[in-house]
Image 1 (cartoon, helix red, strand yellow):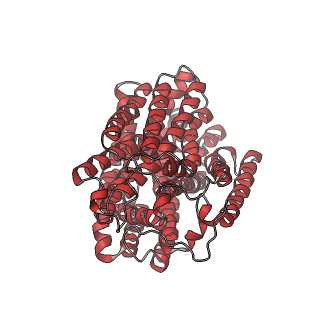
Image 2 (cartoon, one colour):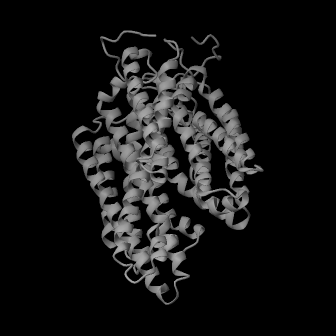
Image 3 (cartoon, one colour):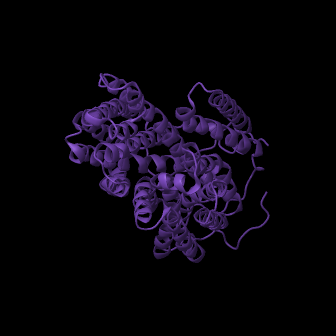
Length: 533
């Protein structure tokens, strides 16, 4: 049990909390800016290195597998540590946890930017993931613990907009830095954001913590880490190593066993658990989690498709390709801010369902209209519909998750929200990416008649490989390039229609099991609950 208590700590905000126990309106605005800047640093670092893969390979003489680990080790560490570090933040104080996370993250980002070798980059990116896992759940927990109920939805909407659109904005800024300077300048962005967030946090963010009623669930924390590492590793490495590869199957077995052990242990501990899994029987937690999992999965899968479409099919640069996503990001952020007001009028379930329906319609529009000759204008309307729909769906889903857990577990609630997003992202990249690759190979095979065997084998590896081979294909160059681009679009359509099917199932699920009530409420404790240790 914690023995050190800060002077007059601010408790988690709820409907019964007196207004004078919370920061005033001006201070709350500064608090919201502080946590959103901190969140932006974390989100931008998830996707920033994607734009510098060729530069990193040349700088360190690294293989593509090593470069992918520069990217994946960050998200793997982040996802694995979210739950335990979110719980620790609840116990030790959210402000100290946020400050510590910002310091760790800033130092690690600076080390990555100055790294003399690939080993140092890997170590720094791993440490960045630790810092990010300290920051990300606390940013949302600070909002739920310092904003009164009537303002919480709006603040969560702003947070959700940054979480959803910040990755695109981070990629654009990262691409600009790589274009005008070098890959090392990528890490100037997170360091600058950390410095700003740290200054605002130290000045304005109050400390909030909960006196723990039970000892820390060490077994639950360890099993959750093993489960998340195993399952995320499978999703990240399965497409590269092969789904039937021994290391993939071993990671799947370890992750699945750890996940079962985690659930069994948490059921045994009940209120003393790191995460009371019985709460997934509630509409709010289950509906919010399933929605975020599917929405972030589809969104991540879309980005897997859009970037090669812009770069390989349309021939755009990385910077221009990222800029092309900005309308979608802006609309997503705007819709995230609008969602709380809509949910207050029509309810969170209707708002989520409307967002899902709009996002699914956007996917269907892209799948039906996209073409090589149509270019950017053939996908822009669908992108805009998707951005608006996802923004509407994400905010009430996030509020449903944080509102389903009691106030003393807001760090865990926020971490669960973040873990769900990370799992959805990894799942979407793996599954929709696999569908795109399979659809491309099936389509290009029918267009390779008369092409030399070696060139045809290269073309089957992907559209970028095919276009590179076309440069050396002599008189067949134009036909091969056209075949590769058209085959990519056909693969795109298969992946998008699969996404439409996912959104249709999700729409029906939310109509049947979506949360009924708007706004965070403390989850009731079961009457038959007994404490465990």
